[in-house]
Image (spheres, rainbow, N blue to C red):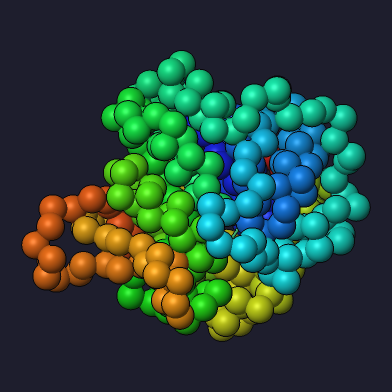
Length: 312
Ligand code: BDR
Ligand code: CA
């Protein structure tokens, strides 16, 4: 089966992405690497370990990664995810982790997994791109050796969610995002497809009251619906990282090859996605971008994969 490494900053939509992957038999989660972003790397690492323990999957290794962006000061999103990266109710439901991260930095863990699994390995980086950019710096051959890299980040035609131009993950470490776009041959899944595929409130009913796991999923969806980026109608929950996973586990997303740059100039557009839609640069494509999403299929992929971990 396909090997999947998730580079994450849980973070509540990260948590959903992790749970979807664990619930899907077609992919084998070879590890989680953690990065600062929604909260500190101490917190994202603890949240990752706690989540794995909660679903009885402490066999999945966690490797701790970068604690700050290359150049930018760290901006976090606890205002979206909760203090420490998860809502209070979720923190109370998750166990104190009894396991530790592996004794290997995330960057080396990523390269080890590439050595071991080669082109069977897919990496989904759904937080700031710092770990992947460091891995590419250490070993520029990484993209040639693996199956592919997915990034959650960017806003091609839509507006940003942290500034008018930029998506959170690319804003936090714009230099890292730029390197991965330039050097990683990534598939860039941005807000253009993740926001329209928000989950309506009725989705919570499929989980609420179905044991501790169901309540955690419902709590996450409910909390995300109240978040400041919840600009969608009807109190829906934007779960960007889960949408990226839906695109890996199924095919609700339409992609196109394109030439893209990430703005690193430090001004009001820092971290913005410069998408050469009409090919005015006349440069060959450097990545694949997500353009459109079949919203209903995407929602069903997210919810059905989350449901597989509900108690039978
Ligand atoms: C992205 O930013 C983070 O807050 C989320 O976890 C997601 O990865 C959405 O812009
Ligand atoms: Ca994330």
